Length: 562
Image (cartoon, rainbow, N blue to C red; front, side, top):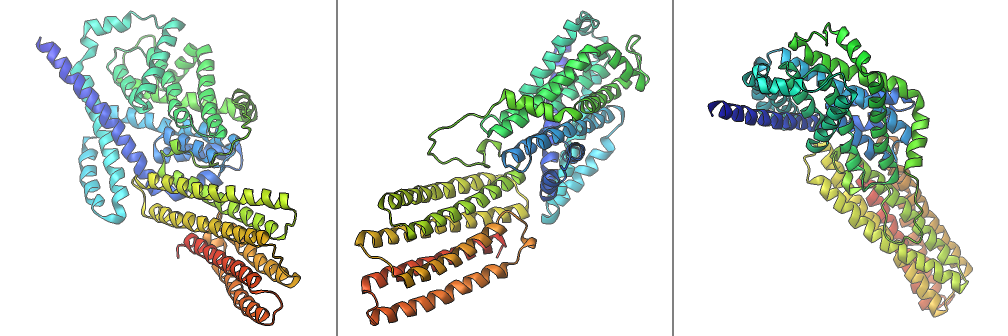
């Protein structure tokens, strides 16, 4: 009875240590993403000029944030946001698989080195830094790594307390499996995949495997089968994140799964020679056993050799992989779809806030482009005499105005959702700027709709602008279009690449033209060149154009953080 209670207590300690490990790695990964957020976004989007730099980028990014899932979800988000092609994403994912092997080496270190002396100073220093605003993310990182190391110490201690090597029933249970049978290897591979899918943490499965192997009860062949299963199971995170996303994001996630499945298949074909070769690298004999302290290193070495070899085999076949996933997930025609569809924002991919902000920025830039397209319709409407075409264009403007209202709400809600997470100060500032941008962009849509309604009022009243008035209105609208063009040049790029004074000069020209045209309009009405009703319509059009120019300036100022 006492033995059973002891085992129950140790099992609970083991579960607690695993929970602490998952939490520590999550905390450390999130802190690193906040510390390196803007730089990480820039690196992932720029350093992918070819498949080799893409692979290196994925490796370095995963080593930096200590989470292949974070890098993969990030990459899927980038594909969804149109910042990466599918081929670039596949190369990054390959690199992420190599980068995640660092985690296995850290864990194997935790089983062979006493980390207690590092853990408690890290807790103390982390607590001090968290209270300093400018260093709180460094403090979060130290807390996360301290939790991770503490959990490894606890796992190692729990493994020794369980003393499984002298537990006859456990030893007999694992000894009952035929390690020379491929069916047994497949069974443990499936178990590793299933557990990883359930706990959503390949690190936890790796920790369990290292624990069982280091006690000497789990043969190395079965332990490596669990590690192979963990490689497949870890793809579940990105595939779940991409379920409701765009087709390109789903293809990137599927490519991750196919990459790892292919790796497992070829390893199974040469399983025993490959494992024996890896064991030879660290001086371990899988046939005689013993030297249990070397088994964590064997597992880490296998994980590294497997991912590096798999990447070396497939990096030259990225175009073929791209064609396969495109064949498995073809584009679907969506006829007659009238409801709002955001191209870059996928709400279920809000797992990495720093990347979610970049998606929102991309969507906001497209929103700005649609507002200029809406204004182009207004310019067409102002010159259209055919009644059917006039009604058709006006209906398009009405639909565009309705979509602008929906887009503003959709992006704002998305930003609110992102804002609920813990963000860096720079990212919080970007969220506030974008909230202002989408509000002003919607106002541009309102101004376009007001212009269209005024033009329709003129049409219904039977009034026609004189040739001179039409030329003046065209000149005013041309200035507004110039302002919109400058706004759209600024929206997707870096602020440092543009000069806000260009926008101010255009706005100044619009204001001066408004004053000149209004004064000329009053004089023309007094001189009976046209009637007061037409003069009022013309004045309303000019005023609305000037308001549109003001909204453009507000958008640009928000983009520049002014």
